[in-house]
Image (cartoon, rainbow, N blue to C red; front, side, top):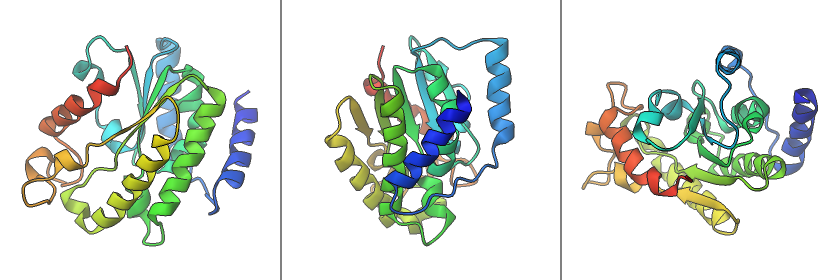
Length: 221
């Protein structure tokens, strides 16, 4: 079944993206770790799946921030949207979630100057359509690309990508765009330094508390 799903996803990638998305596969260890965890304690069906890149990967205690919600965190490595597309069967579809919360796109823009906001939108649409096709009743929420001190030079691209994805989701049923971008800026319109760890890319507890406040109203009970 997984092989069939990956074949279909490959076709959707080719059909759905104007660019050719070549999915990198450097995260096999992460995926195997998820499989081992699932074999030890099978996650419940119809939970909320958090999926995406390192801002979710490092949110290891995410369930503590959302008591009363059943959350499966499947953020892995510093993944890009093509990575999440590639591993959608293992990180999203197998759980038959009632809601999928996605944080990804940050690393897409950082990976190459050639990656444009339009490419990020196209990649996100591909992922959105894969989820919608396989789990038509699932709510799909996208957490906006965050501004960070180490990636200030990408902020114009981030804002355009966020705006495009927001406009796309506004036309989709049972979906949401979660804007964390503006709340992470200071009065000078630059990323707040007090909510990041030393690498100026990933957040500290204060940053995650800010995300919790903004994300919680969008989560399904």
